[in-house]
Length: 449
Image 1: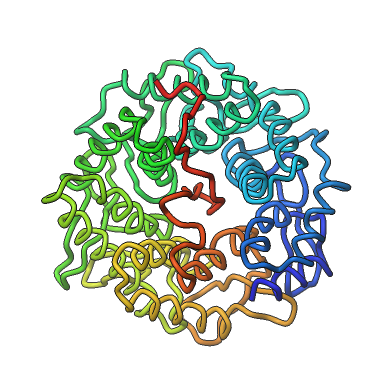
Image 2: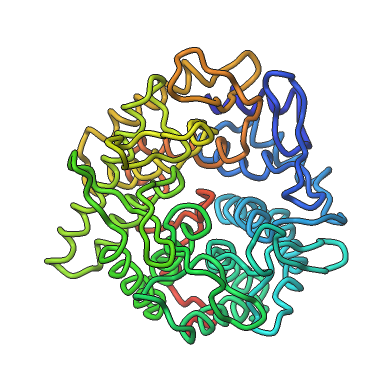
């Protein structure tokens, strides 16, 4: 599957950001501010791990010869960080090849002006040429988004470590200071924060989009520091406790899910993006103390099971973008605009962690069901495509092979069927785009005080 996805991208879209597999051409999009080759950089480490050596060399050659960082355009700080910087750092750590390190550091420098705000909380959009930054037009009152500024920590610590320049680590440690200062409603972290005042802009809380990877990076910061970053662990424990108290629900049919919170009122929906949380809670359970450990492993298994149900209850056996628990419906999309599947990885990500941490064979069985569904409904003549409605067996394709399909979905599926020592969880932490970063078992110089 990886070779098929890559070969078609290479043939029809090399150097563009994504492949459009139905029309057999490339797509650039406006997320990466003039940067190109998102699929190349996202796929590098997967090609390497899968020992697709010839394909890896093709990708590496493109990075060496054609990857231009002198661009002018508005980029998502978050997407450039997790896909490009994450992909380059991981490939550097896997191969030791300097080109990946130097590109990562050069790109990291271009992101720094986004932090020039009164609080040091970065704005979400940056022009990589001029360094001007601003907030997303749709984000209320010029706010920054929790998942975006909260998902820089892992990569920025490595940028400081590799460059010897403490500025990257300082920027992300400052974000924590701001978050620790501000009052948390019920211990929860809302999704919108003003980069000017450092206060919350509205009280919407979600473990899905807008919030998701902030929580993931707290527990992973602790793990990446070889369990020395106690501040991250404390923030994670507090956040998880509040989530469990206020957001975790059980449906009448017995399914455990994480609702969204809007100023105190619960919305009984869970996004596909929130399905990473089963794996996260299992990963964090190891260090929760003996009696809490089993409790969290059970919670992780229940959430992962609910996400599996969102797949099992669809006609394609692929899950919708969001599913609800209201009016008698459970784990199904009830709105037309939530029935699509864009090759997302979060459910198989949780299967991979649950397999590694429990070795219950059902997780491999569930992963195999996803492989078969992808082959049946998403494979087209020239690549893989998302589908517009998971509840019909004659789906319409969306003509987009997302870069994260190669970075994450196929990597997590591959790791689910590998031996545990392939990218062992004892030695690697995956960024939110599934790019592996090493756990620092020696001294992590970047200031983690």
